[in-house]
Amino acid sequence: MTDSNTLLVTSTQEGIGKTAITLALAKSAQDAGNEVGYMKPKGTRLQSAVGKTRDEDPMLARELLGLDAEMHEMEPIVYSPTFIQEAIRGREDPDELRGRVLDNFQSLSEDRDLMVVEGSDHLDTGGIVDLTDVDIAEALDARVLLVCGFATAGDADEVLAAARRVGDRLAGVVFNGVSDAAMEELTDDVLPFLEGKGVPVYGSIPSVADLAGVTVADLADSLGADVLTNEAPTDVHVERFTVGAMGGNSALEQFRRTHDAVMITGGDRSEIQTAALEASGIEALLLTGGFRPASAVLGRAEEEGVPILLVQSDTRTTIDRVEDVLRSGRTRDEATVERMQGLLADNVDVEAVVGIDED
Image (cartoon, rainbow, N blue to C red; front, side):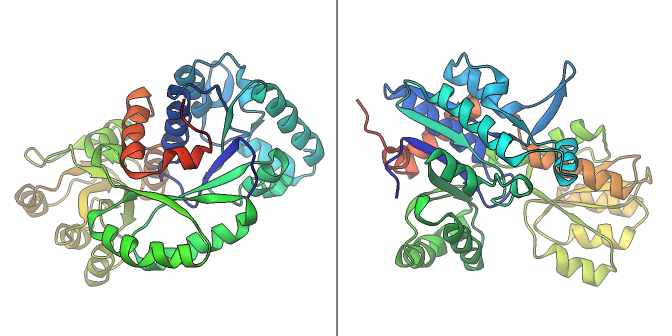
């Protein structure tokens, strides 16, 4: 393991809380009296504003940590669809891009006790220009923290594979958003297994409803959906979606394998809607095409306390929009980071993760 005071935080999947953990670690180190810098070499969570496409995460980091760096320094590569297209066509120079990242890093890290570098949602991102998170860790001489989710023991495959790809630069793993049902298996079986394979685990953060996914009400607002149920609560959280595209029996089998999900299907698919209402893991129904469901389905939804949303768009378009909303998760803000700081303090060896001592 390197002795560098640079920590690169990456993850094995989208929406696992990497940004909140990254900023919470940086803020915790800063609160302990250290000079902390931040960088996100590849901007992937892109929003367009004032004619420029930028990633929101460095903006929040600059505000939260009181940094005066320019956005183009903190985020030297805007990893947009246009950039990817140009890179594939050979119009982006990997050596120039690497040099840009290094130059900005040198400037940002001057007089810092710790540099926190936020990676991508996947280790493969950036491969087309030889700048995956592993490549960047090598270039910056950084230790790497893997943020992973956990639902079943089978997830150990993905964690172990990611750890092996990172290699000697791996500082360790933090599991985030672990349900109560999964925590025992993770603690009793999977953590000892990973430690036995040489993969250090700094801690496991339990799932907290108000940090996971989005509420049904927020989803409805984001989509401009009509809420057809009157009594069913819309403050429940959904973390994923499932699509009802097959017959009722097959659909029910599929729905029973998911949890904390919104089910998307056409408003005229009564048999699929009924099947979804029988599955305990379906928290809401999102119906497409502007078709109102049968009154029997609406009545059953009210009885079960499952809200039904209706949009005018087709199913394919709706899936894409829901994916965007869930990927972004709840609005990242200072309160979110403060909450994550508390969770880290309670469940993770923060001092070991950041690699510096408190004053």
